[in-house]
Length: 145
Ligand SMILES: [Zn+2]
Ligand SMILES: [Zn+2]
Image 1: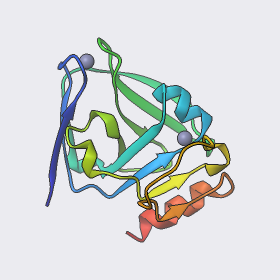
Image 2: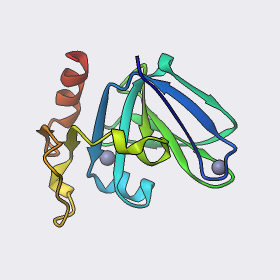
Image 3: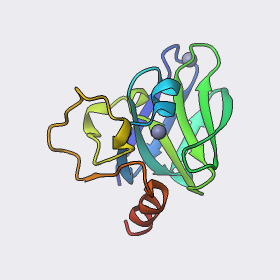
């Protein structure tokens, strides 16, 4: 079992997460805008994730047409995690708020149709998906982990 800590910039929100499932880079324009930069998320089971501190939330419709709830610190604005209706029981923790972010190179990338054309990886990405059928393939990968 591995345990990981993290938190926001101002320090009001702290969290602990155990046993990462997969690290994912999403290249869609929605995630890019919401993150303010590049989106990288580490997926954990909701039951292995606990937060201390007050979070604000913002709900929007994700790429699959399902709702996504983004949780962030209302003081410093750091995005902490998001929860997608489609992926029941899972949370996607933003890579940059994990204290040990270096330990989570992305293993999978989605929405490569929108990938910034200068962006390269170091060979860590094993699976890449274009926009088409991303949700289904993502679901099958997570179900088979
Ligand atoms: Zn904060
Ligand atoms: Zn995205």
